Image 1 (cartoon, rainbow, N blue to C red):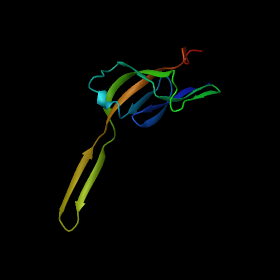
Image 2: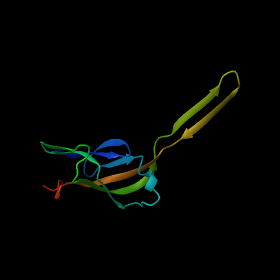
Image 3: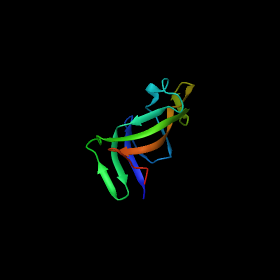
Image 4: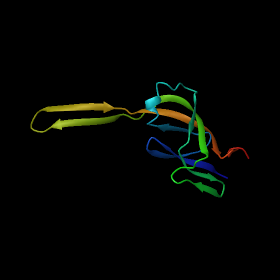
Amino acid sequence: MRKYAIIDVGGTQLRVEQGRFYDTRHLISIRDTLKPNEKISINRVLLICHGSKINLGYPWLTDAAVKGRILQGCFDKKLMIQRIRPKRKTRQIFGYRKKMTRFVIDSIQFGSKNLNKD
């Protein structure tokens, strides 16, 4: 039986499962205050699926939480931007890498139950 949740983190929706790690962009505003191995709790849970039972929120489930911990800060793949001006022999090349935060999911909770324990 698969147990998963769909959460809203920084404007993106992620399908998360226990024990897997994910990269997200908008934990950066608190990136300097969060250290590696620090615990986080995400309350913006849109959907929880536990076996054949599905719980939907409108827009979020009120008594659901996804708990995890920060692994590290990382960078996304480098995006190369070229700016070429026609009829002038000039070109500029910029590189840009998004700052990401990698976190791992420890548990998915709904109500007072931890759904990861059978």
